Image (cartoon, rainbow, N blue to C red; front, side):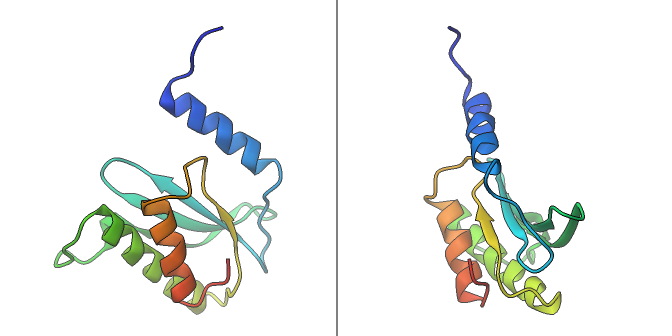
Amino acid sequence: MATLTVREARIRRHRRVRKGVSGTAERPRLVVFRSNRGIEAQLIDDAAGKTLAAATSLGLAKSFKGNKVAQAAEVGKVLASAAKSAGIETAVFDRGGYLYHGRVKALADAAREGGLKL
């Protein structure tokens, strides 16, 4: 049996999680994508196949200074405010096959602090 690469293992974990997690218009799915350079988050309505709100570390102000965990926390705050303006209060958290640790946890905690119920 061939061993999996890190990316293949993450995709396999993500598929396993996605079997049970689905987003609706009232309670969309908060999806996290983490790369080496940044982090992205989207609120997705799976029933309609639409993105309701999104935030990325590339969209942060150029004056923002901080490490990647601080970046992720800022993205969570921005996403929470975008969700409020879209009229979304609750969401289902989809960690995307990543460990709930570090940047992923910081993003989720900041989204909760911003008023999003996960």
